[in-house]
Amino acid sequence: MSKKPTKVKPKARVHKDLDGLDVSIDSFGEIRSNTNIEKINEFLNKNVDDKKLLDREDSERKKAGKKK
Image (tube, rainbow, N blue to C red; front, top):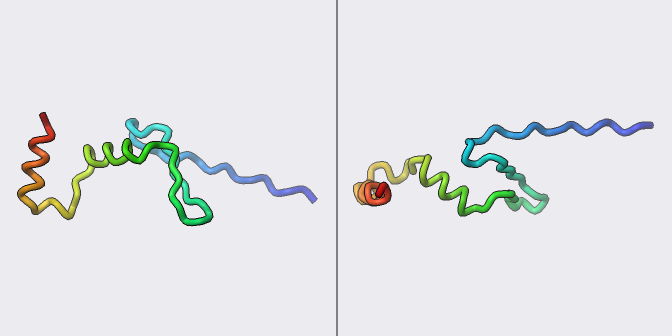
């Protein structure tokens, strides 16, 4: 008997700044990525608003200070 051919998983579409990002979960439940976590965090801080901090005034002051 011949083995069934394995299905090729398609690559996920990602933002152009994170091109080549590949994230997987190993058998121990650990998240594995081919991109540095600091680069991912920097991207998220720049492009995503934190829902928990939307109502806080001090977070808006910090954001205004970042946009130098």
